[in-house]
Amino acid sequence: MKEIIEYLKARYLSEKGQGIVEYALILAFVVVVAAAITQSGDLKTGVQNAFDSMANAFKK
Figure 1 (tube, rainbow, N blue to C red):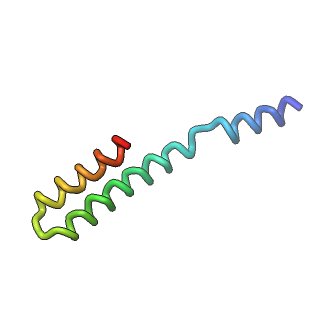
Figure 2 (figure 1 turned 45 degrees about the vertical axis):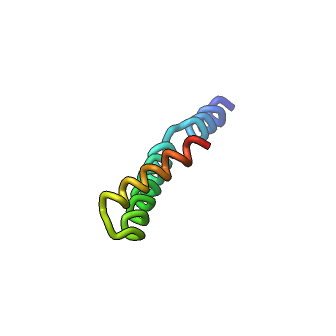
């Protein structure tokens, strides 16, 4: 019985999935910045718009 409890703890309480989530968030951020840059011709304006849209998304 103790082995089963230890197995379940190791399986469901580990932090293996945390790294995957962090990489996914970084990738999503890069995609948003890249999309903003490609939609507008000016690099500075594109990056500024991307950061503004992300800031607005977090304010909601």
